[in-house]
Image 1 (cartoon, rainbow, N blue to C red):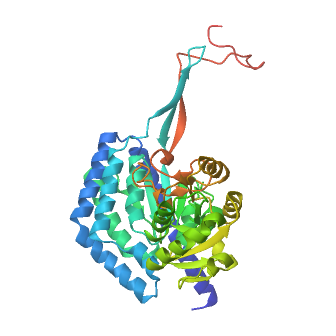
Image 2 (image 1 turned 60 degrees about the vertical axis):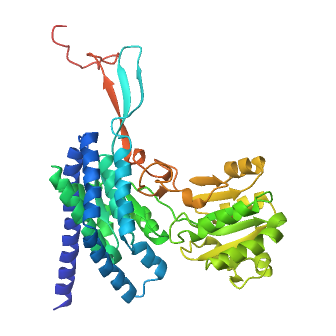
Length: 446
């Protein structure tokens, strides 16, 4: 094959992929029009049926997931990534329960946010409406497939899912189940579609399908999020990296601080709301650090400490590098530093935090207030674990992601965040007063 022929073939292949993505988006656009008109009872029945189908077809999903896990381990996938990829009967049941929770939540579509009657009698309403077609780009967590489908459908949207190739078989099985249920309920199966995952160009085609895709939401690591938000021509909602901190104030209750730190770090270290740095006030460090380092050691956590933490000793302590303060470990690792004051802790968080979740453990109301006012993050916890930053824990049902940007939505994104608004104006022959153009034709009968 000549160079020219090879280039032409590659271009044709790229064109075919682009058209494949855009064709899926066109089908989703048509589906979204129908979904926007679906009643709450229709959508809730659909979600319950999806939940039942997931539980009923669990062996099918687990078999597909086993193929993904085997391929991941063969390729040297780190264990914390294998954990994110892995499904079990319990995790599938939790996904189904998430759909049932969403079904039980109020339908945001049609909610009147504000309204008034103007002095001239014109009636105004601002109401929630679906976004339309939502694209989700995410990495190897199959539960996102179900969460995204459930939330977008309840909010009246169609969804285009671009998952990771590492979860290809799991995602294919899940979308097949969901699509079967959608068809059985008389709604367009194109409401939930899985895009090709073996060529990164499919992400580009999705995030540049302006006019077909209404919004794109990336979920994953810093590289994926940056690739989407920096190159998208479709409006994007940034879900941020979770470089979360736990600050142990001078007045902290030691037992509470230990529980919160361990839960924030070791409960599930591979998720974005896991703590990646602990900051300890110098006045409590001598009492707190030995116990904390021992507890972290028992949990298998390696501590990347500054000079004062290293001096406290511990078999699990290594010297921190400058990169450690900015690292989202997603593993059984945590950075640790002793700070001289609460303002120093706040300054450290401002310099290194990602705006996701920050926590303070304190018995001082003034310290709590100062921390909540000065820390700029989507969620700030007072005497509570960072693990609570989660749509389900916030009573929102399964979340689509945790936004760290400040426009449209911030924090866990549930149903209301998957809608936009429109203004409705009801008149009775109302016209706006003003002079007609000089060359305007007279109205009939004038």
